[in-house]
Length: 124
Length: 124
Length: 149
Length: 149
Ligand SMILES: Nc1ncnc2c1ncn2[C@@H]1O[C@H](COP(=O)(O)OP(=O)(O)O)[C@@H](O)[C@H]1O
Ligand SMILES: Nc1ncnc2c1ncn2[C@@H]1O[C@H](COP(=O)(O)OP(=O)(O)O)[C@@H](O)[C@H]1O
Image 1: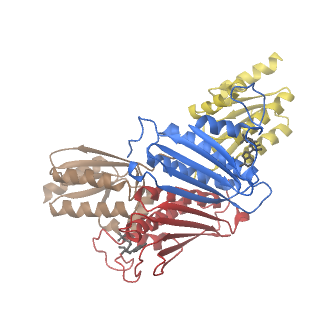
Image 2: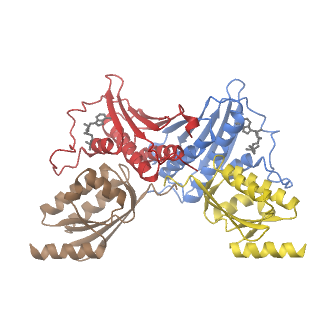
Image 3: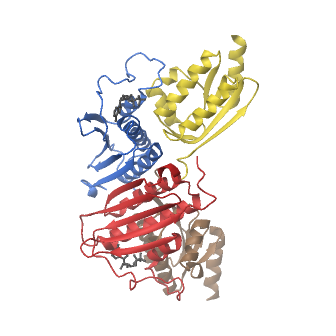
């Protein structure tokens, strides 16, 4: 107890248009800008298919949800998508309250999310 | 983060004079009385050979150290002993600062501690 | 901890984003001691986080000085938390927000007040000209909780 | 967080054992934001815990009312924490305590002040008749720390 209020952001590219962003720790008004920056950076480099791994996200608030929604809008404008991976029961509850469950695609694993993004891409 | 400030005390008897006390969580001025009560209870029932398992003790302060020292004194008066199991590096540091490393026997596992207590008993 | 009914805890923080986590953790510890279960503590953490974030982002907008004040009042079967900022306040009835029963628009804003209302048993915003904004939130200990240690 | 040099955080708590954890967690969060590493944060937690425990057990002995006040002052490369209680104070030079360099007696008491002195970079006790006891503790951010996020 003590150090998990920080956020660790890890990004990994899969192919020339797909990238994974793993968010470990707590996402709030102080830490979320880091995640936003990382995602904007990927967007600028042409990665419009994003997998956001929330498996190790222990806390998340409306600032974080706002940034995820904002990023989703941007990638969709570019014909891409953003899928969430493995949010905790807690985070699912927040997605339900805010009705964002109806907006985001949610997968259980990164592999699943990546496969679904690829499929989406070939369909369009 | 949030619930580990509580303490969970589990006791288990090994033979008619030996018992294990496992302390999980945080030991401070508020939670330590529970651990003290459990140990006094064992003493009253004739268990003078105690193994105190600190493997899951995430925090411990001078109140906790005071209770461990007090219990050690009591069991030694009865020809018994108290051995600590698997304190974290953090807790070892506090034992060193307070010089209590020179007072407590420390083992890595409950089995080791129990075996050492049995040996002490037969030697005396 | 029924014995501490009537007690209160007060926390004063600079109006900066890095301190919202301090508020969350302090209130979570108070709630733990009152015997709230983990799910309720998480609800409380999010609501307090939202109220503090608003106090900092909107209440203290522009002002680089000023502190926000958190107060926990421990009732027999409820925790009352107030968050005060020295800002200009707002009209909660017209503020931009998501409506729980309205149509979902893909908005990045207005989620904070919705979360506060949904996660707490009661909440109330009072803006007093010259005396800032006070958000009052109540979480009740459920019957099965309140056994602790 | 050098930008927040000069900021302070204040916490007021009832003089009851169940609130020591609230103080520990709040200060740990402040220290985390300042970039202290995990080992230093643990040191700070223990020292704050000891000071608050003393404030409650000795400073407020007998008194069932009264609050203890914690203050964190964020310096450029140090965190200064003060713990105040409204009690009668004591003479730190004669108080029962373990001496770091003395002979070990198997005592259950006097470990708290020893831990505060050992774990913090500096500490100081001021007792003012009629105005209680103030324990001031300083922890310096080490050169390799202070990078955060
Ligand atoms: N403490 C406050 N002081 C002034 N205005 C506030 C305060 N809290 C909330 N508001 C207003 O209410 C609106 C809705 O807040 P909220 O639901 O948290 O969403 P967001 O902060 O994302 O806009 C804010 O945009 C702001 O105009
Ligand atoms: N805030 C305080 N007010 C009054 N007396 C205090 C205070 N803090 C410490 N003391 C005195 O100093 C002594 C040593 O404190 P400490 O080293 O923490 O050990 P302990 O609390 O176990 O006695 C206490 O026994 C008490 O007499």
